Amino acid sequence: MQAVSIDPCTLPPHCEALRAEVRAFLVETLRDFPANLRVRNWSGGSPEFSAKLGARGWIGMTWPKRYGGHERSTLERYVVLEELLACGAPVGSHWVAERQSALLLMRMSPELLAPRIVPGIARGEIFFCIGMSEPDSGSDLASVRTRAVRTDAGWVINGRKVWTSGAHRTHYMIALVRTGTQGEVRQAGLSQFLVDMKTPGLTVRPILSQLGEHDFNEVTFDDVLVPHENLIGVEGEGWSQVSGELAFERSGPERYLSSSQLLLEMIDAAPTDDHRHAVALGRIAASYATLRQMSLGVSGMLARGENPAVAASLVKDQGALVEQAMPDIAHDLYGGLAPPGSTLADVMSYTTRAVPSFSLRGGTREILRGIIAKGLGLR
Ligand SMILES: Cc1cc2nc3c(=O)[nH]c(=O)nc-3n(C[C@H](O)[C@H](O)[C@H](O)COP(=O)(O)OP(=O)(O)OC[C@H]3O[C@@H](n4cnc5c(N)ncnc54)[C@H](O)[C@@H]3O)c2cc1C
Image (cartoon, rainbow, N blue to C red; front, side):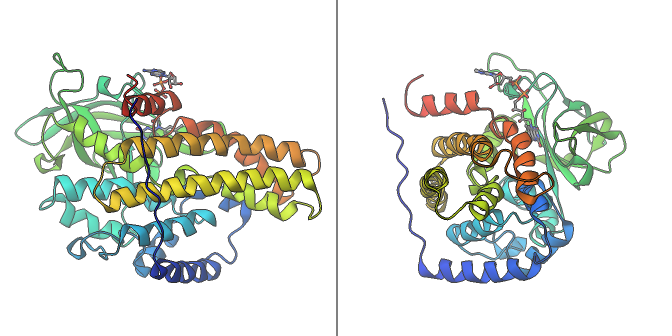
């Protein structure tokens, strides 16, 4: 069996100075932002807040200046993300665009698409959604059936995507579609396209989540014509491009900090002299400390240009376990004690209904464990 090691990473002093700056900004900007919205964490968005972050230079921090970035370090970016997530800031509008879409465009279309689109992402004005999953292709992404056909006028796309988070409030989708045949290699013949969400023939319909909220969508493509230059990277290389993108999707601190509001509410409500509360909350804090070291280590790997796919899968898997256990701990400690309508009761209720999705989104638990097993040389 091979080992997966995540080297510890220490934040340099200037990162801690930046942390103080971000905290002061958040206290001021989110003064009136209530706990029942903070609990949505990176699922909740506000275009106004994204624009404010962009104006502070806190979106696209590590990107080249020619794309509107700020050429700061991965660790500085980590600190900003950590502070935003820990206080439940409404970062959802720009989250996907910053975390993965811009990186893909800069890597795969550095001269054509990136200069046109990425500066708007860095300003917090352009938002993206991910068009990967389809009705019969979630974990088994290689089987996507939405198809693009090359014509003189451009690529014509037909098919259907599901679970597309935020499609109704984003400007662009990066769609993974079939442009060739599967052949012997199942992953062959896939390509990625930049799709303007206003293109004729593209229809976005809501799918309500079990929270009763509209975040997911079904997106249908009926002869959607996209320009030739919107092919991202190389035709037929979509699979390897997507694999790189998924590593970014799985590597951030959001994979263990989605439920931090519940922990904060539990700490606020805890009696100071109760051993049971101290032990339970202490255990969560210890898990957070471990996950933070692992997540920070993944950030260090990114900073050194290493591939963090296996380590990132470990953080996401373990992060989801800790977050999914939190509502049970909350009900055990406070069930029946939090008055209906109180902030604690609201945050508990939301988190209880939200956490099952944490081991589905961004790759299910079983799929991540398959990646980890492969990384350990076990399959
Ligand atoms: C909150 C949320 C947001 C999402 N946002 C987006 C989005 O913006 N864009 C997008 O494209 N998708 C999105 N998704 C979809 C998500 O990526 C898929 O739900 C996920 O990949 C699983 O696919 P599926 O739902 O088709 O389930 P399936 O793939 O059908 O899996 C069903 C069950 O079978 C298990 N399973 C499947 N294959 C294997 C295997 N080989 N070995 C062992 N077990 C297996 C899975 O682990 C799972 O438990 C989102 C999902 C959620 C919950």
